[in-house]
Amino acid sequence: MMIMELPCFRGGTLVTLSLLVFTLVTCASSSSMYPEWNPIKPRHSRLLRSAVQRETPTSQLSELWSPLESQGWKPFVETRKPTLPEKSEGYIQVFLDGGLNQQRMGICDAVAVAKILNATLVIPYLELNPVWKDSSSFMDIFDVDHFIDVLKDDISIVRELPEEFSWSTREYYGLAIRETRIKAAPVHASANWYLENVLPVLQSYGIAAISPFSHRLSFDNLPMDIQHLRCKVNFKALIFVPHIRTLGDALINRLRYPQGSAGETGSNYLQEVTGAGDSKNAGKFVVLHLRFDKDMAAHSACDFGGGKAEKLALAKYRQVIWQGRLLNSQFTDEELRSQGRCPMTPEEVGLLLAALGFDNSTRLYLASHKVYGGEARISTLRKLFPLMEDKKSLASSDERSQIKGKASLLAALDYYVGLHSDVFISASPGNMHNALVGHRTFLNLKTIRPNMALMGQLLLNKTIEWSEFQHSVVEGHQNRHGQLRLRRPKQSIYTYPAPDCMCQA
Image (cartoon, rainbow, N blue to C red; front, side, top):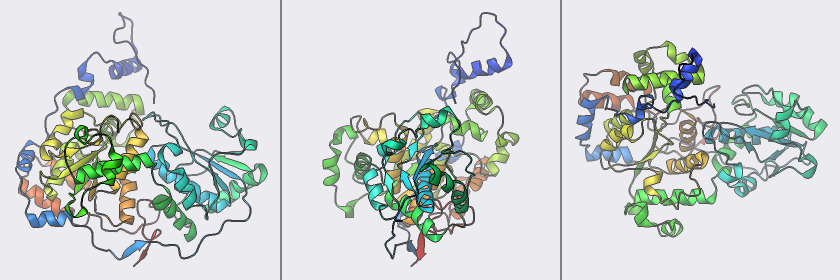
């Protein structure tokens, strides 16, 4: 959402309350409006002091890093080759909004809808994200040749429309109501809805454009072959473009075989990855997905310890962006934390990892976009994990040149590294968390799911000792290290891939 910049001084002119709110949020003359410029003190100093001095027994470390044992499930394998229908009913276009992982799920659903309708899928159009301002296309992010090849026996896919339908563009649908646009697809629509409402459009015009499309296909009551196809798209057909995979492999190699900074290793990461070290001597690493930007902090309506300046800045931001229409605003900070509805700060997720037993020799990769409060807020996490790295510290500016300023490509790189880590943890729920939890479940990889309500309750207790905190954290996360959970009705197939995408071994 765009916010109008207003002058900070009005020369005595009367300013209305609404304009004053805009002025308070957007004036850059006072650092108090930008609390990340002010010193941010640790909120849990007593626990932090103990955590910095922690020692973890070798046996506990060994258990933490050990891979998950087989849980009796394995990825579904096709036993017969799918067949394409003799004739396509027409072309399906979808326009996908949201961030990378929301778009990823939309792509999977688009393939499924094309299959339901016996239609030809046009490579999905990714809308410009209004928050991240990233115009990356499908072909900028995903390997389109691989995508088409993996699905060639399931559906017909074209990169672009033939000349006779070249008029069917986003701009065309933005100008007026069009008969070929499907605008009213309900959230979690059934297969029958598409057959009854979209198929007639296809048969009449040879094309149907569905927008909006995100979350427009049900997770329940679909034929099993459609569910299997969604899984095939998500876990096999969608891989990132080669330069993302190559850079990702270089970062993983540097995390496993640390030799120095990105500047010391140089920028020839193709050669570096090809000559990677002996896997027997490979080090292990954790990926922490930390989404703690201003939007999330403000939307949560929680108090993050930045003092009056931070509270005021976030309150004004909430008023401008959401006009006060936030459910969380009805609750106190204590109530929100007790319910697990506050995202964890870098300090808090650091205390969680330390309590679980990860010591200060742990190599931690920080997957994040922009942390609200900047380095001042990250510094407590760095105290606990001095070997913390991120994209900037591991890769040279030359290596990052192809992804610089492109939020979707930066997120794709973090996703790739997160998928290949020994342990993955996300500091708060969200699309990246959901997507990686599902993908790592499919591959039976260790993934820690924070018990947000427990953490909120423990951290509200300002007198708790480290030993009690550590014991409670370990006990409260015993079955949250990647143990498989079967999908329940209405839950996402992309977060809970069993039983739809998996079968019992």
